[in-house]
Image 1: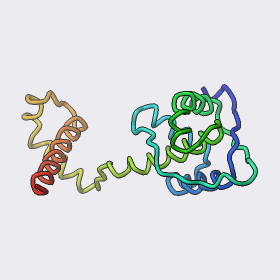
Image 2: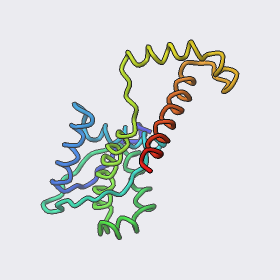
Image 3: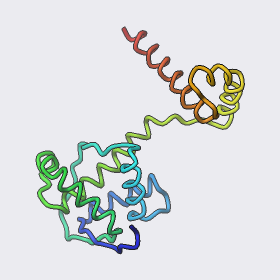
Image 4: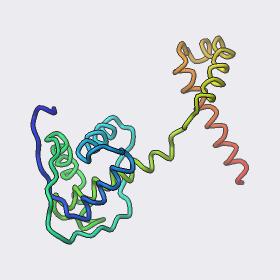
Length: 173
């Protein structure tokens, strides 16, 4: 789709500045249009969804144009048609430009929220996990039809996290 060309969207200066600031925070050294492509692809793959967040931004000033890939613009158009009533009700975003501004801010906010649910492991944690894999390889192969380390790690870590969640629930009663 990149060969389809480019499109421009209008953004108010405060919105553009906020988007560039967030891009610098989450994607250091990357330009905003490139970050939008990555976010769009992550959302399309189902890594996270775009939630509506409490956002109040300044829509004052003259419009500035942002050049983006045409497939990103088409995707924004699709979402505008899909969510325009919700965004009009929630943010009073009654134009495509206002919708796109809020939608892009919500994309970054949703990405930030999704980062809270990621398990981060150090290399030493993988050594422990690899030892567990070697110990339990036969058991997991018979019980879950697991044949690779990745499959084992997914099931084993999910089981551990479920146990921790259950313990938290029991202890909070």
